[in-house]
Length: 116
Image 1 (cartoon, rainbow, N blue to C red):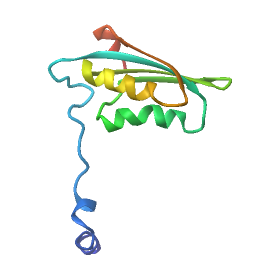
Image 2 (cartoon, one colour):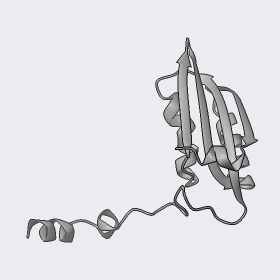
Image 3 (cartoon, rainbow, N blue to C red):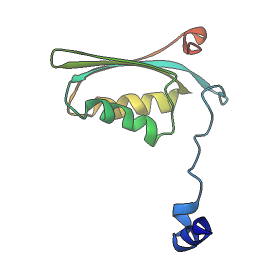
């Protein structure tokens, strides 16, 4: 009864299910291929969130992630599957960030993107 009362007082957008990405990590759409992105950035408290934000905006879920801080530098290695245009868009967005010193985009062998 409480749940029904709460949901009726909330706007429709608050009770709607969240949008889902176009594909789960196990599903690939036509034209998608595995990529890797290596980012070197200033190790600011928000740096990791800022590097990951474009992935969320574009609906891309990284399949593998490794990050480490060395002194005042953050090194992030991400593996993901996307169309080439989306991967290049991610690369451009991340390179435009003030705290990013360097970012390299490359493709990976299909079996390395399948790691868990």
